[in-house]
Length: 136
Image (tube, rainbow, N blue to C red; front, top):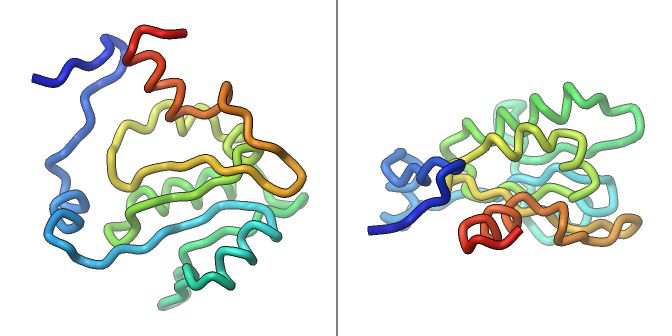
């Protein structure tokens, strides 16, 4: 039996996305990030645009928090996305959504950017791991 911290609901393994991935079906990565980060990942080949729907959001100064929230919610609902990469400094703008997100798939990974180094103290995944093992 797997133990879970009292404040964190157990991960949901029974959703269709998880089942599809376990069967080996293809899935995409999505990215929410600054221009340099997204461009780098697009050049590496993760970009996908189909029927006016893409798997990335370039966050510029004029991008509102509402637009970031909308992209995050859209990506977490798509059945073809397995991993969402998000620049940590952008994740801070929607931290409340990340903290309330408890699904396994798509997994959320916070990554650094050129201008903003990675801070493990802010990472929601590491916070959950520490909480699980009784560390604060």
